[in-house]
Amino acid sequence: MYGRKRRGSGPTLANPGRELEQNSECPALGGKDVPAPANGGLPHGEGSRSGEAHEKRGRLLRGHEVPLGAVCSVLFAALSWLPGKDRSSSPSGKAPRAPLIAIIVLAAVGMAVMIQLTYTHWAAADPSFASFCPGAGAAGVDCDDVARSEYSELFGVPISFWGLLAYMGIIAVAAWTLRSFRGKAHVGAGLGLLSVTAVGSVVTSVALGYIAHYLIEAVCSWCTAGYVINASIAVAVFTSLWKLRMNPLEALGRDLGFFVQRPAVTASFCGGGAVVAAATLLLYPTPTPVGDGEVELPERIEIGVDGMPDPVREEAPFKGPEDAVVTIVEFTDYQCPICKRASAHMSRVLEPYEGEYRIMHRYFPLDHACNPLVPARPGQHSCQASLYTICAMEQDKFWEMNRLVFGSREPLEEAHLRKLAERAGCDLDLLDECLAADRPEEHLERDIQDGIDLDIKGTPTFFFNGRRVVGLPSEEVVRRIFEEELEGS
Image 1 (tube, rainbow, N blue to C red):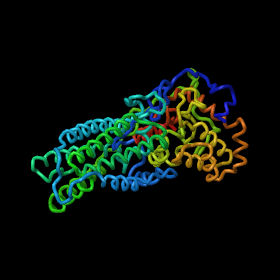
Image 2: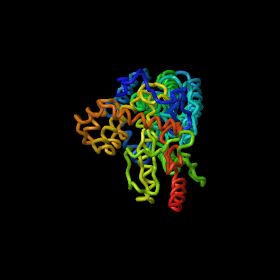
Image 3: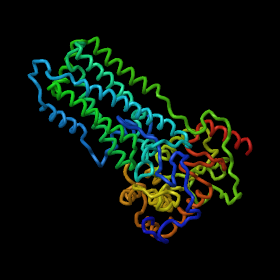
Image 4: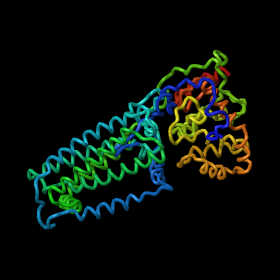
């Protein structure tokens, strides 16, 4: 098994010197880590859509619970002991214009970071896109993996876009606070709201950093910039409070009192926020799948020319009739975020062609333990996961095991894979016998070698009767392929 180094000191497949290019949904890069856009600040960090995304957020720290509500409560309890004047009097001290201006500047920089992350998240739907990620190539730094992960969205919208809206709100409130020193509102107006936002953004940064490090196992440098900006804004907010000799709870009480006394202003404020949130949820566009709007068919590979192998291997697991008009071969990786979405996406776009196709699963793990084209980096478990599913196939449990592995929210380490195999209904004694044999490694090596010979640059890569599609194919591309293949059958 990989990690035992059964044959020599590492992978021994053909063409070990060739590196993969950065041009696919889950690129396996030769000279640097595997990128994939991100989100950040109230950063983002490519997940599922709609209410399911919210449900995932509720489960994402399972097994690693972080009591965020308790953290907030403790923070505000501690902050309530900051120095403050008699609550019945007005705040004293100098107007904190410098820290307030710093908040506006920092939030503006944060907006720029969020725009970059949102653009990266959007552009990543194109498999040829490679984001600009400062520090990419260093161990564990991979903006694209973070951005394409299922944790990168909230209610189907990139977290980076929500962060952009939050920074805009921070600028507006900080500007209101500055105006309060000209007699436009109670002195220090808005500092209570800013203190709540500052604590919330710091807690959010900690949670997203935890997710990136422990669940996605990759770090986004743009996201990290957002975390630093959030912490800096928090420092500036509490510096402003300190200069006014006011604690956060006092400031928040004054702000709430202001809104209670002005119901029209409160209705406008809450109504405006609700409209912005609703418009974001309803109007934020879905990234375009590969080939959407295009009418040109993907080129068909020339099998046998220059050693080009047939993507179809009959020993590979497949679904659908053996005599189907269209055979779809998918080369995939169990830790590729886009590959996790592929099953639901393909089920949807292939629904009109039920009975006309079969879909075949093949392996191309982006893991140095078995794939010589991939650089070593922490958190690579795809080779081991592949071996477990190959052995599950010998017990006719492949598709159930495949579903569980793709759906796992925990690192695919051996102990967890054994639990998944048990849930899939595998006999663990037979599984151990299979894993100890050479068969699963030989199967995996054949798939990887075929992937190398087919010039696969990343995952997922599909072959529709030999027509190559890298990334998730659009409905239009699938329709055009099936029209031509069915006409010629």
